[in-house]
Amino acid sequence: MSQKRLFLQKHPVLTGFFILGVLTMLFVAGITFFIARLVKPAQGVDFFGAKEVVGIVELKGVITSPEKAMAQLIRFQENAQVKAVIIRIDSPGGTVGASQELFQQIRTTNKTKPVVASMGSVAASGGYYAALGAEKIVASPGTLTGSIGVILKFPNLEEIFEKIGYKNEIVKSGALKDLGSSSRTLTQEERDLLQNLLDNVHNQFIADIVSSRNLTEEEVRGLADGRIFSGEQAKELGLIDRLGNLYDAVALAAELAGMSTLNPDLYYPEEEGFSLFKLLAGQQSTTSLLDHLPLLSPTFAYEWSVSK
Image 1 (cartoon, one colour):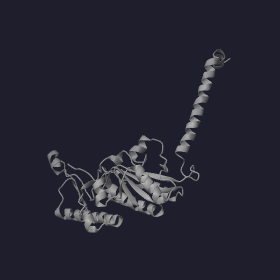
Image 2 (spheres, one colour):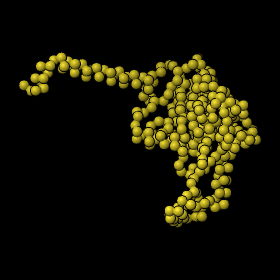
Image 3 (cartoon, helix red, strand yellow):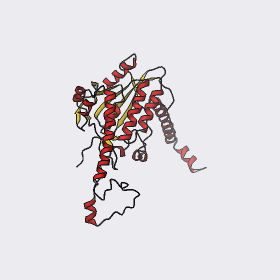
């Protein structure tokens, strides 16, 4: 007789508890899995029945990779049970291209169903730009917003390189190919070129505010010097529509969509399981750990940023 069988015969109580423990663990795991699928349904699976919901898309941190938020907007746009969408913004802004992509996608979704922008603590520069695509913008009285402008930052390490004896040899195909090099000061020609580019994308920001907020170009230019505003000030200036919190924005979205209740169920997109690698790589959620860091490379940005 094997030692294993002999042990089972001599200790029937312990054996019973062991078997019961295994069965309990399997039961709990099954119930947990079932509940998880109900709370966060698999993509494309309908657990709502005929219920109407408001979809929530969260935009947090520095805006550099808008693809996931855009994909969520498209899914909500195509889902007949999602009657309205809230874009919840807590962002100091981000790169020009990413902010404009979000603005355009929000505007496109708003043509199909109402989108309301709900501003959290900060919705400045590119964060405000994205909100312009919504039907209505709601902010708290103390929300920091505005910062209508463009910024380009890169280091000048020329003096440090001289002290340590570092020399940067460059072979280039044109006079402006190494524009922004950290090993030397900008030439006047380079500075003029960059200023022209900044003015161009700044004008794009202003034009989209004019078209979205029913303000004149003169009014917007008077506000577009990079200053920030409180939500209360922004309301007085016509940059937002209402003062309120997230649930005020939800009630407004439900009203615009003609829903039967102004307190509808909210639906957040399903999140993937936690992964440290995906978090660092920017694939974990709408934002990644790296998205919350300042922009490190020379990039035109609609970003509220304080530089030394």
